[in-house]
Image (tube, rainbow, N blue to C red):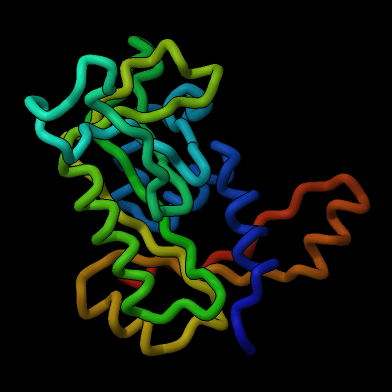
Length: 199
């Protein structure tokens, strides 16, 4: 059975909520342990779906006109950015987890290329375009970026084998679209079934 757009959209919408994002990280313990405070997860994990960053222009500073900005906005090829924040001091820590959800008709090379493109894009120095309620938080780039790949039961074994061989962490989700639609009708939020961390 193939991965459908509705599978992808369901997980993107679900993990845009900080509570579900924490549950996602719980499936990969090394990342879960990077959350500053589980009890104050609302202030500890900022979720940014389809994130945008401000990076330095590729054009040398000497070639810019006075009216030109030395920065440009770009959309990252990851699906979610999970930024860790100190809930006491209200500042971003040096940890950023970038989530890549397996997209329909995406093979191993395309999936990993999105992570490589992100690494290249962010190598120029960057700041995050933060959600409105977190505009006050200092948002310079991280000391360390961590990728997390989210696959489906339907994801091909080749992709799972490739990620494992490349030592890139992934988790597997089982999305029941029919159950999701029923939960929306009843007004009760459902969470995708998760399998233990594959690492």
